[in-house]
Image 1 (cartoon, helix red, strand yellow):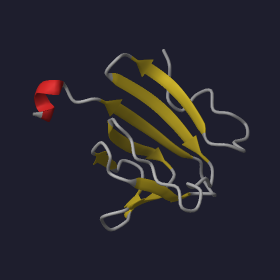
Image 2 (cartoon, rainbow, N blue to C red; image 1 turned 180 degrees about the vertical axis):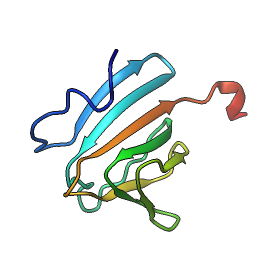
Image 3 (cartoon, rainbow, N blue to C red; image 1 turned 45 degrees about the horizontal axis):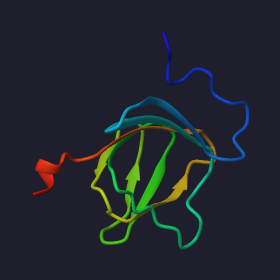
Image 4 (cartoon, helix red, strand yellow; image 1 turned 135 degrees about the horizontal axis):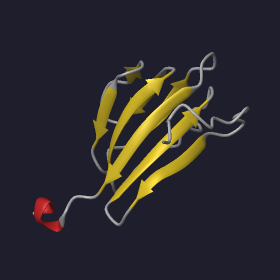
Length: 111
């Protein structure tokens, strides 16, 4: 049985993104950060909604239109589609492991 804490890379010079499940409307990813952050001036502006839970480590997410959010293990957050955000920082002492679920609203929900 797969385990989110197994098969971790020995080093993470770049953030590691593993797609665990993918369909037309849903994607589930395991993301491993090791002191990584978004580049200066970069903002995610995603067409999909995102629900993310921090499993290990710590992180701070910055938003264009609200206060930053500091995450510890067990903290979760829903990020609506097109809400601009960026990763301000992740722990450089302990690997940060995220589980992120992305989905699209059905056309009926957008009306």
